[in-house]
Length: 297
Image 1 (cartoon, rainbow, N blue to C red):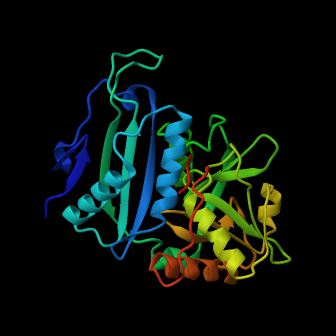
Image 2 (cartoon, rainbow, N blue to C red; image 1 turned 180 degrees about the vertical axis):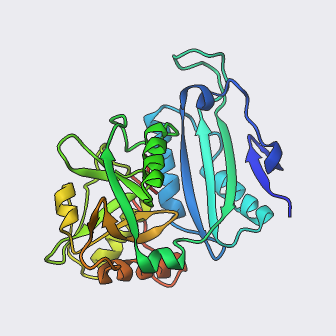
Image 3 (cartoon, one colour; image 1 turned 30 degrees about the vertical axis):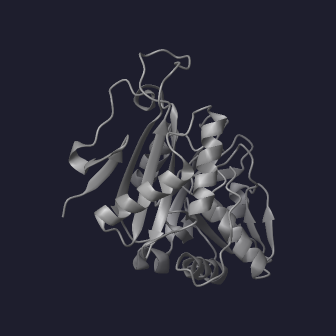
């Protein structure tokens, strides 16, 4: 079956999709992106993702290439053309094509591309066994709340994780606190059963899945705190997990060389994961994201 991409107003065969060599996204990473999950043909947390896209564009002074309504129509058309039932849609907007110069060009139209991908959200074996993460220094810029396409530190971190036989890398700031994963938000459950994830500042990407999980926790009466936690605190946690638009919630069995609790997925993690899956399938009442807040989904 043919696979299509959307590039600046045209649906084109995926293999032929391309942007100009002087697109500022290619030359300067001068752009932003979003990833929206598709569950049983439904866009999950769509409004929150588009709200965050709008915020990222405003923070970088990039104009919208089309209206929000048109963007929604294009996403759905691309999903239909590629017959994606479960997977994701990736969209990227850059400042546009201009002669290479650091300052903002004038009179340039933003570039927009979209692609889709079929996938499952956490293979059964991964969820049932839990995953390993490693810790590494956070070497990113200071505006991680913008979902920028400048992802080289995360690429290097992911590669270190792969070489260590791990699923993800947890980035750690200079004070020894976990910020977030290379492409996910980081969570622990303390020994007294409290859910903890880092507060949303410019130090992390305020994940849309993260926001929805917090609202689900509040609805369920689950006590939580938004605050930094140390690597040592994570080692001693009752549970740990990661969240993103493409993993939902995945339990962690090991951090570095330390087994977390009994090495099996925790009950609270699995409860939150199932509640989020129900929400993604439209079983639960809609939980609207605030869409505020690079790296996680």
